[in-house]
Image (cartoon, rainbow, N blue to C red):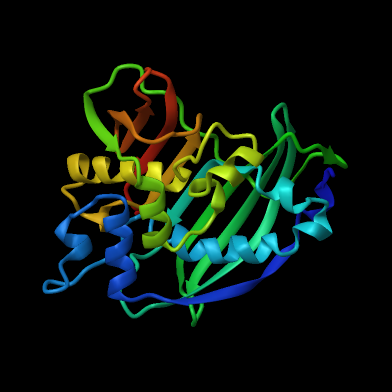
Length: 283
């Protein structure tokens, strides 16, 4: 069934999550980041810059419950892959926060591989103080679009490749990386852990979550370029160029562009799987 572009402008009821030390530490462990700022509860911890993707997943699931109204069948929903991500961090996540995430559909466009949908998720404290704003772009492979392309809000251009890296850092993805990330981040999507479901979705096998690949790359950048301090990262923009199968040896190519850090992740065959740009907080 086609995806109806009339869904642009629809809001989904908010979801609320309680954040504790255990979830924050587990998220860091799930991407293999043992930075003390993320796990040392003696000195006090803060969340990884990509942590908000975990509570945001609850808002995505709430939206998926309505996908039948919008034209997608359950099988078509499984074909959705993370294609772009634009995260603006307004304040670090710390233990004890109650986070409320609200999702709005802000774009539906035709793309050659299928329908492209962008969901904007606002995450705040219960008193409405902003924590993060994230645009999740999902590509539904082989799904047609009905109605005109609609874009309700300005979308940032995805970053380009790193042509002249200042550093190339290896990144090992183990055979159980997707299962580990699923449980630690509390993000459940069976294409990442169930080979039968991945096959039905047209994938060659289970794939690593795009947010996991991105978080691992951001950890490398945070360590090298931001002194391991998660509070020095204010925005992360990314485009997912290819799926990541496991196990695999990736490489993170890094280049600085004034205040921003440009990053490209390549697979062991040299192909690009991810490009991203990491910016400090805006003044």
